Image (cartoon, rainbow, N blue to C red; front, side, top):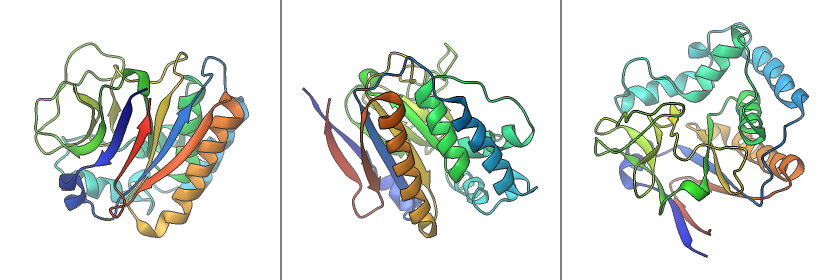
Length: 235
């Protein structure tokens, strides 16, 4: 058994002192089946109702992400995952089923208007950290084969050998993506606004309970908030 650490870097925290990074550490998973379809369908309906006819970029629970992306100089056209997800369902574009873990975090993300993502811990090398990129770190986007490294100063999640999520929550890496064989996972929900701490806590609880109910796993919750910005776990 190897001990690893998840931590938020001081360089990230200097830019985003109030950001909350919620983690569900999910273990002993069975991710080869399917999530009940009504879970994602219900979340899509609730997301449309919550949007209330506004553009995703104008909704008060989403608009801060565009400002955050400008703060670290995100490349033009890069948007946070929740804005892209809400925009898709608002346009009645289909949201395909990927695998139970991804479907579950997409449902929680849509219902609570919080960005979500996940990494297969079996593919992670060393510690996981949320930091600013030095520039040029290895990153192969999900579904692609060519390297697409981040810019200097870009917010990234990374491990010892490269980026595992680029442009904060814009795109996951192919190397650590969740698959039907994933048994240990790190699931992330993010918030920019401390006024939404209660909703973040509810969303993390729903995600953790969903992992245990639908994937037969065990889940534990951590929230990194600038006071406590790391935790250790065994793998």
